[in-house]
Length: 348
Image (cartoon, rainbow, N blue to C red; front, side, top):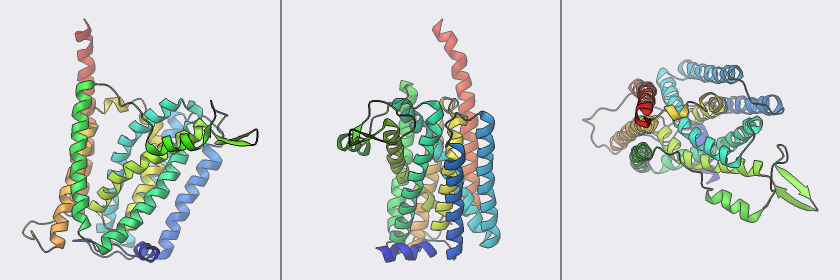
């Protein structure tokens, strides 16, 4: 298995309708240095002194991470090919749109643990570090499996279509109830609470505490574990979606890294605006459904079937994803404004 994983790092899985992308070892090393460097800057600079970021600070760093992703996409265009550059941007935009849905859950988790606003940056950063490690494992494992078992593309496509249906169902049910989801500790969090001693309250931003020769974990660490394990479930959606847009592990990890690194700033910017994205579930369903159909079509082509139906090129994929994202935001804001205008009439 280790040999299988290592071979997938420098080569892409044998995906249908996809040219080969040769990635040198130094490119992986450079990407790793960038990601580790950004995390180090955050740990040493931003979160070392607990504070609530201002809108100006969050906006500045969000634009920085977006600019960094754009630079990587441009590099991919000139270093590899325009097609791979388009695949990166499609994957990046998809990961970012799915990350917005993740923020809903992060807000609920952080609120349930009553994390002080000044410490929320640190919780999110540690959660993102866990997510990056888990997603790298998922990406390399997925690439290795798809290289050996091409029929798994059918399974990925079916899973994406089912997830799209689940998003529509969730969006419809939330419209009817109008109530936000309540946080319920997952299996990982419940197991941690049973195995380890947990302090009654926060001890600043400490993760562990030694008391009377016994080691305790704090609710701060428990919240980080909850966010990290929650992202493990999110990866089950995003990684198959990424493989539906590109077969290149290098592109998928880069898109995930840049999207996740900007997630912390996005959390503070859209915290009060998420309730206005009333059609987000339907927008995500459209994106996942489109990628599922695209992946299903490519899987058939890989089996020498349905060649009379042309594949969906990267430029079309990027255009469809961007149009869906923009339309979702615009329609959500219009719908939320209309709903707010009706509320006073209904209360009279």
